[in-house]
Length: 81
Image (cartoon, rainbow, N blue to C red):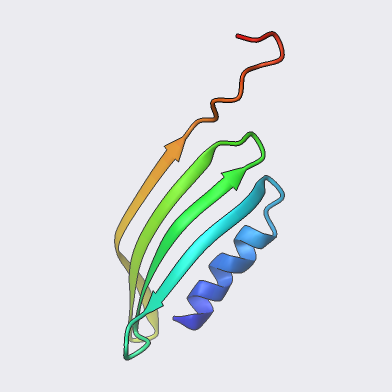
């Protein structure tokens, strides 16, 4: 599960349109489950909130539950509209 989370973090860090991220990680006691929750701020100031619950079964990661909520930016355009 640690490698799964590291891959997600590397992808976020190497994506130039993501200005910042805040991802909280909660690993299960057996390190076979993880709950990721947080948000990504994009260059256009839109936000993606995420929540993912994943389990590891036989060296395969399965995403059992997930939630994504995308919010457009409220930044006005150059012409003020």
